[in-house]
Length: 263
Image 1: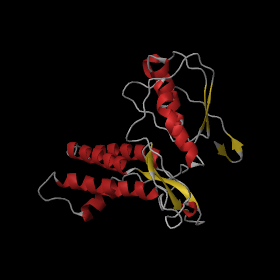
Image 2: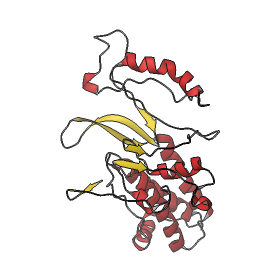
Image 3: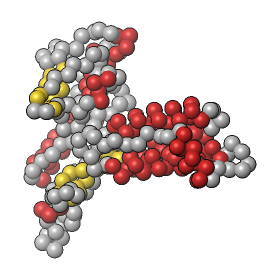
Image 4: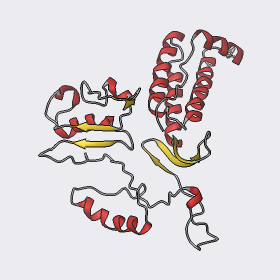
């Protein structure tokens, strides 16, 4: 990462997934040899420890690996996500044809629903159907690591850029979990509810608070307030008006998004 013209090197204290340094978005991640250490926290195998350490890797980051005398295999029942980009469609189809056999050598298979070829050229460079009988009119979208990846125009420059927004299923899941928590804990003191909701929202902002995704994180905050009011209203037969809820939020405010992470 870079700040004020300087390159910064940050070392994770323990593992990576649960380390405080995981809040940073590094352009380059270095993973040295993985040893059986801190097994009570990181896991009992080198594979598990490596997975903990590699959790700091963000989409688009460069990963530098040290030499290793062992291989990492996917744990049974676990998926590994990857996106491969090709300039020419014929290259993509050649790779797709050999992937199942290559993956099979390591006991891996391609997910039948997630594996697909997708045209993702810049919209103004897509071949239109009026110029070609087959092919889409515009680039598709795809979900990756909880985000929907799509093309859009930058607000300031008007140029085409690749953006990400919270995937629809992840958004619904996050809201549902918070709503269920509000339902189950609506009789707790308001201060405790505020603290718990604040932790959940900050966790969501920490991952999904990316440039280009501002509308989605603010929408979640609004819907969480609505769900909180809904379940607080169930504490009595009188209900809870929005005027009363707004006064309550002045005394027990919920954290607002701060979109600082790069797209």
